[in-house]
Length: 233
Ligand code: PGA
Image (cartoon, rainbow, N blue to C red; front, side, top):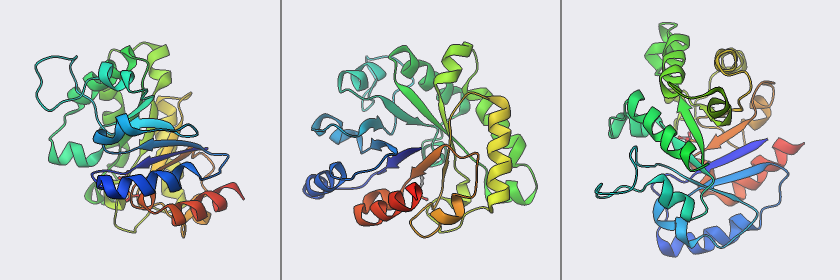
């Protein structure tokens, strides 16, 4: 099982140091991928966690003020990078084309993209989730070779479930992950959106999940430990 931790735009330096200490002491058989804010990527002094970034420039290094390139991420030992998170699609107006370019930049540097896809509540109410997710996946992997496509991890994150405490039913998640696996049969697919220590027992009933992308609970090591323990049982 893969468990990716998306810290989003959280933790001051004073908070980050004790948080990191707690996180690296966690024992689990799950593969942990830790995605802190970019400013901390050069401060990671461990070990048992793979390091992921939350974003990358869609172009190479150069005159792109405020951006961080895949080459720079690689030089910091970053192995994974989230792309296409719904918060970036919404607030930074990231298009599928830009996401596709980010994935290409990452793959050039052997960094594994964690591609987020997901529908809004209104899309699910209108039974359009399959169509939305299919478009997001296909546009993100445009022009990639089979070998390149196979490297990508997909995170199914219904937008209405992120940070809301709501999760889809196990049937809904199973069906949507199947849609993704029909497009990309060899790829790992994670679930994200209000996954926590209280609903993990329910989420475990979904047999086609390969792991989780955790936001809120990633910032609370005590709860994360309970989540991981229940996941292993
Ligand atoms: P959440 O966030 O776990 O707080 O819902 C998940 C995510 O946005 O990746």
